[in-house]
Amino acid sequence: MAIKYVAEPFRIKMVEPIKMLSREEREEKIKEAKYNLFNLKGEDVFIDLLTDSGTGAMSDKQWSGVMRGDEAYAGGKSYFKLLEAGQDIFGYKFIQPVHQGRAAEKVLFGLLMGSGKYAISNMFFDTTRAHVELAGARAIDCVVEEAKDPTLRAPFKGNMDVEKLEKLINEYGKENIALVVMTITNNSAGGQPVSVQNMRDVSAVCKKYGIPLCIDAARYAENAFFVKQREEEFKDWAIKDIVREMFSYADMFTMSAKKDAIVNMGGLVGIKEDEELYQKVKGNTISFEGFTTYGGLSGRDLEALAVGLYEGLDEDYLRYRIGQLEYIAAKLDEAGIAYQAPVGGHGVFIDAKAMFPHIPYNEFPGQALAVELYKEAGIRTCDIGSYMLGNDPDTGEQLQAEFEFTRLAVPRRVYTQAHLDIVVDALIAIKERASEVKGYRITWEPPVLRHFQAHLEPVE
Ligand code: F0G
Image (tube, rainbow, N blue to C red; front, side):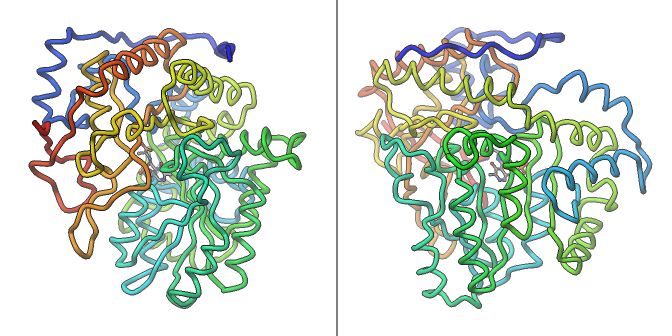
């Protein structure tokens, strides 16, 4: 099906040159980087799809906000502007800025969980899982079954399996479940959305057992756009009203603002009404981040964030944004390349297991495709599969992920249609020589979040 590229609803006012190294240079660079894409220098990358986090282009309004940032240590104007925006959009009484998403997890999770406890999510992202574990608890994923079949097109593949959630609560004992986390959109499942109905159902289960419900809110706006398109009840709602409805069912949220709020750095904790918990969050913020009215950010960052929270909700922007992903997906359909379908909000998750059926999970097919994309066209992506998942914290054994994806995360307002065409052409070229591509083994790894730093070599 031919799909029309949605024209950028903006003009480009500032540019940043990029260039493609020769194939020989790329082969050399990736070898030097020990086949870990995080070890590459940014300047050696042509199209950087490593992440959509902190890599977006800020608007003229955000940049002018930067000039207005109030750098007072305590009680700066920009802080109050951010509070107002957060309270208005999410409807929560307490908003605490922090420097990024994992800082939000750090200041909040330790207050709610400890050894012997469990946290259950539709799917934890890697840092979120790590912070559950650092707080002494164990993280359990509970996504709907349909998410596990990349070819199965369902509207809300990010949803929680509510029946299984209730079963898990009974199995582990409700007193041992410290928190339920709804990740919207569900990053690890492929940027897949969560329906408002699913949120309502999960909230009802949490209330029944007295378990607090937290939203991992990095992609709150993209999720709302999908809800508007796919959930009948909301087809005439404003995006902002959908966001507010969604958040009304939770008790708190953590947010990496580096995604949908289109800033290069920033995060939030939101607490709906529990003042005692908020007081503790403030205490942790002062210890780990900085005084409560700046939370590890400059005043200028707070100001850009207050603007960005609204820009992320703009429907013309979201149509273009999701349109870029749908454009890539339509071309992959034509080429017969499998990905988590329908395409998600922030990235295309290529099914590397389907492309490389000869590479087993413990030789990391998702990582193998990421390396090939760099060699092919200087494109940087990342593995979202067994390589990222890592080892069992109790036994040290390599875990097998539900999926072996290579994620092409698209930065916001950064790349054009021609860049996306290059990405698709590279994937087609790799598919044609797929049987020659080899797996990888780890030659060194650190104990926590190993995929960022590990060294690898091809399995010969
Ligand atoms: N939660 C989700 C769903 C995320 O996707 C991320 C980050 C975080 C929390 C942590 O936020 O990076 O600001 O500390 N995801 C990035 C990614 C890194 O590439 O998907 P952070």
